[in-house]
Image (cartoon, rainbow, N blue to C red; front, top):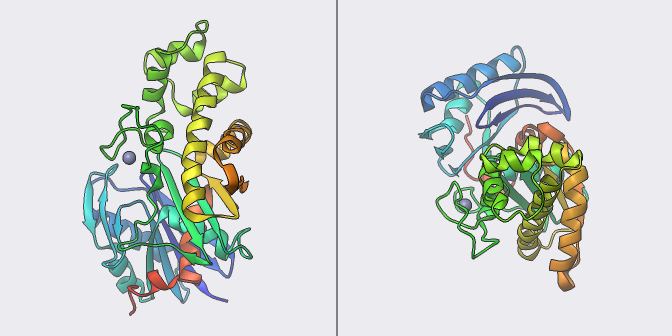
Length: 321
Ligand SMILES: [Zn+2]
């Protein structure tokens, strides 16, 4: 039974867990430092030491926001943190004296399904995270697709509407993430409120002011607010368009979906997405769409999964003491 440290670096929280076999025995978290890369490395080392105190660690997995350069073991740039060029993989590995593997969070989410989740016996699967942004990871023919520097399948930036002027965090327009990313939803709501021909509602008033966030949107839709229901339907259509690209690219048997927006609103998202997919997919058919196996801990399990069973493309450049 392997003992591994899993580290989940998010834009808001930094978490570390000790896994013994598939069991989580200890978890600790802190706010992700917003000051500098060196403070981030210090925080990672301190959390990793704290969860693994007195244990012999066989391997460490780090799953991080990106973009990354996994060949060099670096976080290249974190748009939400305001710093970059952080050589975290080797710094953590040297301190804990264990092989250390780095991958991005969406890839980790996909690998979590393959190694530890419902995807163990599935060769072709995709993972989609719907939260602040939109991330995709895929396992094809049993292999995690990784890419040149670890940033493969940034499908959140596929164009789902070429007539749209909706700006995306990446600088482009009309992207899947620009339409559905939690961070962009207030702006999308404001744009949509201009096309609304129904009566004024509570959600509509908030949308006009640019104040309709994802939580309020979905709870209003659940309470029967007509504008919110119309907007949720629009977002489901946008998701279905994006998911069609995932289907065309990877031919998955199952698509696992996670991220806070999906996890808390599956009842409103899944049926609508399937309804529009049926229209988009043609001969490809609608794959099995399921909630991911580990909820809010999907990325943490993904970090553990790459430490337990590193895919060749990640193992190649891992840190080894
Ligand atoms: Zn984009």
